[in-house]
Image (tube, rainbow, N blue to C red; front, side, top):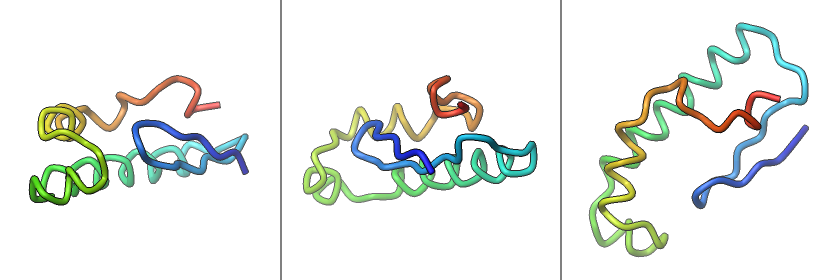
Length: 71
């Protein structure tokens, strides 16, 4: 399993994935982004993320992920 780090999160993506695995991964990514938008400002500061960065990340679409996450 490959471990990738992006913006303070660690994402584990298998080297080869099926279509269904990619769909579930995208749903998980979208849920994580939505949860990020629900964090209070003091919690965002605790993890070193600005409110602006959190808002920007939370509005990204599920398919908007770095291409190397799909390998």
